[in-house]
Amino acid sequence: VITGTSRDRGTLLACLLVCRSWHEYAIDLLYEPVHIFSRRALVRLANTARACHGVRERLAKTHTIYITQSNQGLGFTHILPLLLRTYLPNLQRMYFINFLFGVCNPGFFAMLPQFSLVTHLLLFNFSLSTFSGFRRMICAFPCLDKLELRSGGFQSQAMSPYTGQAESRSIPSFTQLVLNRVESRFAEAFVQW
Image 1 (tube, rainbow, N blue to C red):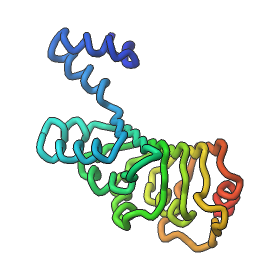
Image 2: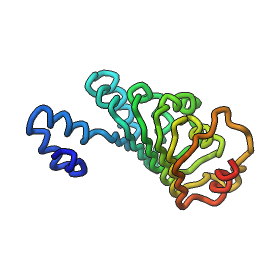
Image 3: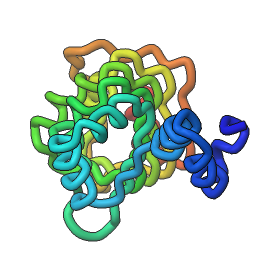
């Protein structure tokens, strides 16, 4: 019954009241995908996980995370692995919306391999400062199977998109690659890589 209503939040909320076993199952369905919309929410989630065992247990079961960055204010995507890496050991899908990839904290790249089970990565409405940073990000996920790049490209028109330098980690073997409305210079750099 509950599985058939997994997309209807109202019904899932009603299922919480039926019995303890339905409650646990409905909670898992309601909070399985984690949605983070701001730096403040990310920091609050990390602090709550640090203080509360129940939150750590829920995050440990999480397979999907959505990170939606506002086009205004400070970006926060680069601190995500620093704050949540230990709490999301089973993460398999990462979806970055409005991904503004400028100068990143070096810890961003160093900590990404902690999400070694990620098989699906989506960058939607993305803007990259360098192709080498993009390469480092993609190569950090050894199990990456599906890569979706939708609506994006480089931040600057004067960029040298691909330098031909070898990456220290191997390129994942994709079974599915989606390029939709990406800047032609980015698509060319990706194909050259």
